[in-house]
Amino acid sequence: MAQPPFHLLPRALLIGLLAQAGFASAQSVDAAVLARLEPQFAALQPQMVAWRRDIHQHPELSNQEHRTAHLVAEHLRKLGLEVQTGVGGTGVVGLLHGGQPGKVVALRADMDALPVAEQSGLPFASQAKQLNMGVESPVMHACGHDGHTAMLMGVAEVLAGMRSQIKGSVKFIFQPAEEGHSRQEDLGKPVGAKAMLEAGVFNNPRPDAAFAVHLIPNLPSGMVGYRSGPLLASGDTVRITVTGKQTHGGFPWNGIDPIVASAQVITALQTVVARQLDITQEPAVVSIGQINGGNRNNILPAAVEMAGTLRTFDEGMRADAKQRIIRAAEAAAAANGATAKVRFDPFGYPVTVNDAALTQSMIPVLHKVTQGNAKEVSKFMASEDFSEFAKEVPGMYIVLGAAPEGKTPATAAPNHSPFFDFDEKAMPVGAKALAAMALDFLAR
Image (tube, rainbow, N blue to C red; front, side):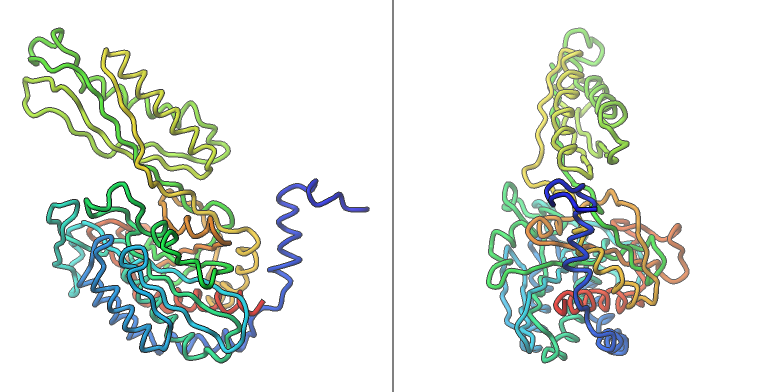
């Protein structure tokens, strides 16, 4: 039977045909090359552990990663890479030219820590403090970015040692500020991946694909998780000011109580997901995580401030949900005689979408380098600004299980916990996966 014109084919079928014609049917990297990665990363593990622990003891908040950036830049220079610093803030970029001309692949790691007081009890636990939005705060690598940086430093060392065999170039991107803003002077400005893109990180040369990995202790150690299409949710911060009329708490009829109105606003927001969005298509979350109002038990305040997060897996649903949040908040406040002003921070994170054809072509590679310890995973409600890179070029983001020794995925402290830790023995697996995907892509 003759095939219909390409533009009339179902999207899923078209993606499959393109994958067969391009990524999937092309010659992949030699199996012997992949096999040589195993002993190299095993030998490099002690150094990656040392880097990780050093970075962990000296964590730095978003766009304040000066020490970490210096450590990375010096390492890349020793490897003979072309190095740029100060890219999009404190970002570092290293360019490795292979022995033969070819495509360009980008590998990315994030460097920043979080304003969290560490309670892990590790011998190398952080005691550091930095200014977070102008206020001194404890700082901790509570999301594994210390491991991400150490792994990519290891990948750079291994690939630099085999540059004569590489067809094309590898761009190593060490990104600041994945966790968002930590400095008041950065408010209202793009940071992280978006800032690096605006600074030209994808220029001279432009990558043909980009890869990244994230450590999570809630998968078995050493397991690699992948998923085609949406993997991580969009992330938008919503801020709502509910304004009433201040009065004595004993005479509430003389004013307009913004606290009661705020309670009804929060309840109304839950109906956006529960009753208004078609969550049979994609899941969504609206959560209010912060509320501030009032300063005395018998005074009804003039206003209440609250902040929360919106998470979706579809950009159309994301835009629709924002409008519904505005409408729900304004209506609930108005029903109490109050007003609600809703605003979204200007630089939310888009959905992280793994390119279908690229993912399909890399699944066999992941199974090879993990000896079959790779699987398709469910979507995560976490968000990531690697999504900005994946909007520019085909991207693939994977997760690396790293439940600490003595813990199960169910009992391990999750990312962003003050008790967070991960199994350092998983790092060679993540580094090997990044290196293998880069080599395989360039060989096709």
